[in-house]
Image 1: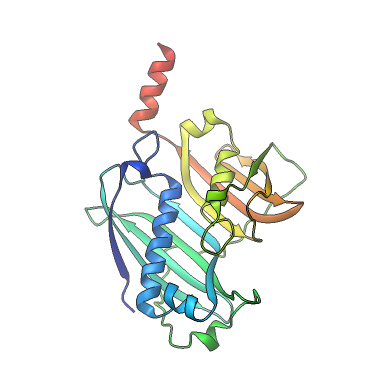
Image 2: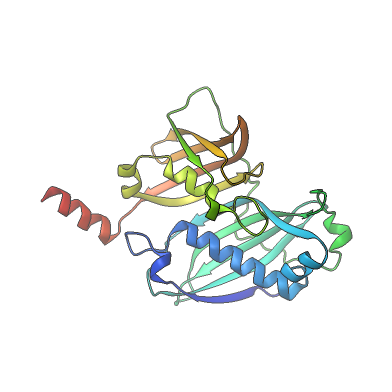
Amino acid sequence: MQKFLMSHEVSTFECDRSNAMKFSAVLDLFQMAAGAHAETLGCGWDYCVKNNRAWMAIAYHIQVEKYPQMNEKITIRTWPSDKTRIKATRDFEVLNAAGEIIIRASSQWVMINTENKRLMNLLEHLQNLEKRDERAVNSDFNIDFDTAHIDLQKGFQVRFDDIDINQHTNNTVYPLWASESVPEDFRVQHVVGEIMINFKAETFYGDAIEVLTKFDADDLSVHSLKCQDKECARVSIKWKKNDSDAVLIRQRVEVC
């Protein structure tokens, strides 16, 4: 199977205060590329609507070497890399104009019957779905979280605009809750370098979300996201220093 290619130019609304692409925008691009490729494979939106089915992401493992900058032209490559009875694995690469891979990712998905919410047997219902035996990130998608020690705790609420076409909170929102739970000063100085996300339960409009955060190291935070005492997601973030000019400018302004 050939890798599916999608070109993109980074827009201003996709960028943060440092003129770099937001992590949430990266996830949006992954969803867009996955959806477009699924359409060409015959298992995309049209197929799902006609057959009362839906794809749902259950895990991501993303490694960021460098974030694309505003107006930068990039290419997203994606392909199915594995398929079991219940889970499908899809991998991604983001390349800059020079052809260098700047972001790598692997993800896992399930397909559900939208009428009864049951998982579909992919080996039975998508027998002809091919895969490419290549992984962008070799991951088991496992995140350990020890509740014995919690460093931070913060609450959020699911907004109306957080709900997607599957009538639940879109998967791009969960890592935002996790990253928003750490202090602003830390966020200004750091960006997401590597992240794992496990989606465990659906949330819906108006739900109250509690994020429990602990730092396993100075640059590693682990987050348990709960709704009504039930864990709905788990996120692990390895942070790296933000060396952008925008951060340096802010520091100089604060000193002045």
